[in-house]
Figure 1 (cartoon, one colour):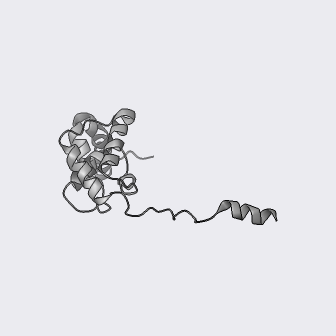
Figure 2 (tube, helix red, strand yellow):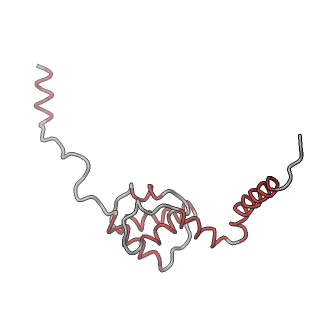
Figure 3 (cartoon, rainbow, N blue to C red):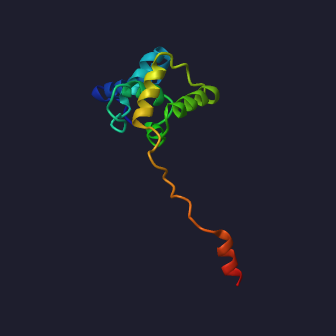
Length: 134
């Protein structure tokens, strides 16, 4: 096997160096790494409105934005979820971003106007049981 030389060696070295930088980036600059990660997350699945960038930056640091969009709830629900994530999953203090995030989520991913379940049946179960027994 012939040793690598010239352009092939340079490309191999450059590729390896790029991979090394990507692996070391979080250790070298954690804030920049989170910002770069948030910038790489597609936000088209979130409603375009004030607060979307904060939701993207804070929420996608730990989980997919699909987890956000599949949930629904009022402001109290979203605050309860934040507190749960802080207690159980070490979510950081959101500081002044929290009310903006909660308002955004409650407004665009609020509680559904109607329940996804059907209304209870209007059935007299005693009559139904009697007719089966006959």
